[in-house]
Image (cartoon, rainbow, N blue to C red):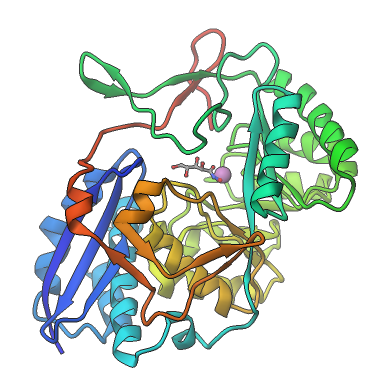
Length: 406
Ligand code: EZ4
Ligand code: CO
């Protein structure tokens, strides 16, 4: 079998998504997600200009060999653009191989290790009463574990805390140009506020509800250590991205001061980003997305490494991962032994129409379905009705205007 076509598809059915579709001479197609939120076109160009020409004529069954030749052959290693492009190829080839085998992908990954995939959803509110309502809304949707985020008194706009349509795209324009929203930030105010939020949530929902919180890389290691200690009594499932993650050694200080479980990795793109974190067991969950980490092949290897150190999987699943990336994640979740939890935010109705998928969400749990491959079809005609719409992630600024980590 040979690859005869590889097409990069861009659409915005509520959010921008980049998809690679590989077609073989036998007419079998495979899909891979290449969406890099806010930098989509960089991956589009990387694929179209530098990867597609290398794929044409090659054997789609040689997944590992293709991965290694794209990674090592580029000479320029790692990085989110490269690894998102490689991820899209990897997942599309796994999709093809599983379709040829006439099996759902999870069967090729060793088969199911569990009946279904536990997820967590996002609750948020500008203040505590609004947050409590949002937790109730997630529970009504079936979620059995919930990430809680709130506004901070004195701050106008905080990332991830929005009202109305929870997964809106909201591009900001200046003279027709897309520009980032500027959000404000104040770490001392946040550190004072968060324990009161968790106190209110525990008082309302009791001790058993698994609760998560994302600090979005905003704290210094010392601040993160203090926060971890301050919230121990609220028994978080995890504290996510407590400090900027480029500095793996920084987690030693956090880890030594708190028993609050730690999760990190949504901005990582290779196993090297985790070497110290995992081998010294400084974290409890690895949080990379299939889409940004070089695909199913690479993430599988990370999970096997993590398993040796009792670290579990927690694949990143925000709304900017397409249903293609989400489907690949769910197959892996079902198969790997050291599965922890899967983040799941759902998608807009238009997204679910463009990307028809076999995976289902019931009682807070996902299942990849039994369709051969990853189980996603891309409707190119519908997609064309939702053209690319540039948008950026926000920028955080302190009161004096200084740009802050996040
Ligand atoms: O900010 O996916 O845990 N999830 C998150 C996400 C990320 C976005 C960035 O594109 O933190 O909302
Ligand atoms: Co996060």
